[in-house]
Image (cartoon, rainbow over all chains, first blue to last red; front, side, top):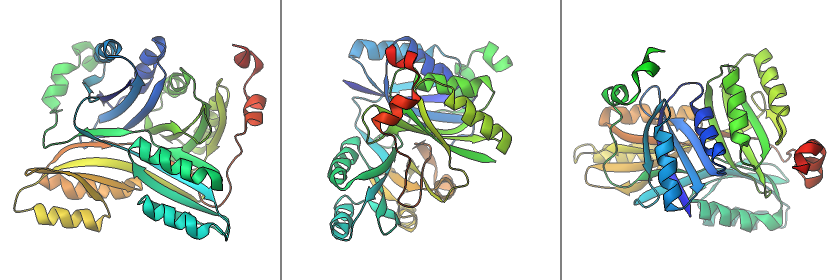
Length: 179
Length: 179
């Protein structure tokens, strides 16, 4: 099944490389990966989705923790959470189907961000399944190009792990700090 | 300055690792990276943002092309394009500031996706600067956590490069196909 991990890392060159290598060595194909800044300077948060059983998920978690610059790993697969992905989809239009396409955009609560006489670019946000479904609806018109961000996830409720400077100092090995 | 690359890759284990390593070896810190499926099975599209001058951008492009499984590289920095990023932001609320926060959410055309008595989770989409600005506005209330996808970009207008099976076959070296 698909396992979703939230990984807090120090924002240093080589972190992404190390994380990607560790998945590679074990032969996992990452289904989705997104990296972005958090509100704490110097700390990034990755969301990684991998096809794995429960045992393998545990080994992934343990191996991520072994890496320098990895601060916190959470498997949020079974948590009550919000999962979202963003896509831009460019669809071919004709005078005959233009209105139909505009209506589909509305039904999916998506947004037109660029228009020409022969195409529209649509911005859509939602769980992966919603975006997949819109892609399916657009396919017969002709998709010119598509780009997706990969998924991000966040647990519902008011709580979150604390990633304070004290936490970072306590987690990163001394040799790494010295470098 | 920030350079934005669109990179089409074959969806194989190790591709992300190879791309990340090549940036690592040259000492670049990737400012933003997003990977997602395209509408063509087996082909993923990365959007990579790196701080680099024009000369360095050219070397990045050349080096990406040298990698097996890299099909097409475009530097879209100077193109007329749509750039978007998605973020989930969890903000602390109190009975006193709740209405104010709700109004901010509306002003930014963002969306509340989870509510508790002490927090809201906000989904926001836009160019990086818009999201940064919302983060700044939320900061005084107390941001509990935030996750961002990294940016994706797409050129305006009706055209896009053709990534047909023939194109893929013509680009991937024979030894790689044989494996």
